[in-house]
Length: 322
Image (cartoon, rainbow, N blue to C red; front, side, top):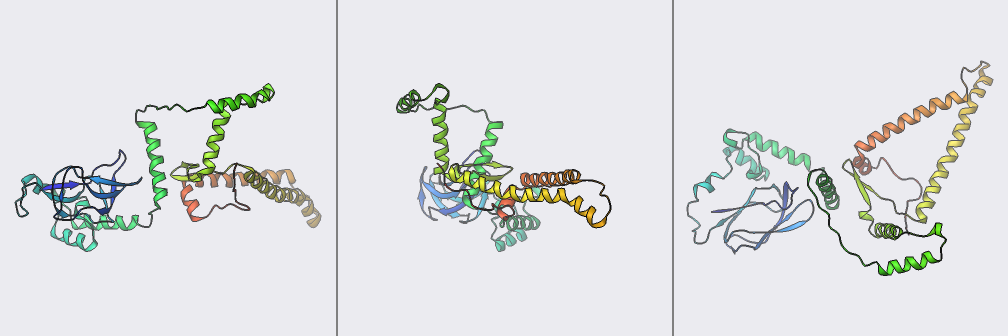
């Protein structure tokens, strides 16, 4: 009996979700045949078989998530009869579990091979099944869309590779003859102080690419995706509109704070102990403290703030670009 286990399809892969089977029990397969489709955090990958034989039993269920190394199916070796006794190694590789644990796992639809055992010799107990089921239920509401999960996995892999993995760099030759000729003609008509560098063309190309593919324009901060803002005249108008709306109420507020001591002195006929400058200092310290608290919360829970809608843009949204 041959066990077909979930292979590692990437350096950072810890588990995978079985999407579909490409084979059926009783079907003969050879090395290199695609037998299943597994969804990782980055993409759906077709998984090939590395042994020749006949599919005997499909253990894993489509739609379920399994750790790397979990038994997905069992095959009969060439010439092996369905009722033949399995070799001792295959028999010992079966997950040990109590009858109560197997029954409870079947009721919950939980593969017993995907449950980590804490009993004697790694056997799965009833408590292990209940714990695994509770973790599965708890993790369900936190599921995110495919694109967000893919971006999170890519960001984590890139960050870890920069820190831990020895890396090398690849280069590619790009034809810049036309760009160089255009730059030469353009600079010929400009004063020396206003001539352009080739880097200006590179930056323009990057900016236009970000406008064309906005889903790639952003960065990750503390596990949350921060989308970029499209550059251009629309963005400039939006910033000007926001600054205007903030400056006018702020100016009115400062005027009221400065006049408040005078009004209080006139109403109660008692000299006020501090003037408008002191009030401005107190208000400034309070606003700075609130801003620091908001930045701290934003840094720690950016993704949650964005999803729950606690931080929203006001006024016109930045649209458009170059």
